[in-house]
Picture (cartoon, helix red, strand yellow):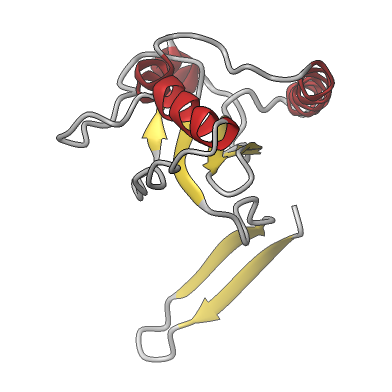
Length: 162
């Protein structure tokens, strides 16, 4: 979080006053070629975006690119840009339910970062959050950040996830 601000404004014509709280956060996708992004909650309930077409399989596209680089063949065209943020079930469909292949050090770093962030959120009684995941086509990296964590848990948010 870069800053939390309260904006107050008065409408001189109607006399109404309004207050808005704004959170300014880092753009984790800044200067990256993100071709797909996912808003993940760890639930399958209403967590699918129907694009109207089938998104290219992640494993097959990655394998084609690696083979082309290894054997000097023509690299396939870049992955299609999906501008809409997808959800949990879209990711499961894309990866066929398989986990991401991460190197050991990356896995340790990722696990520790998520553990620290979720511990902090649970201490301040925030359990309703999402993980934003993006695939950087240029660097072949997975970019991850925690979003939507400003609401404290309540009974309705608990029911929505169940």
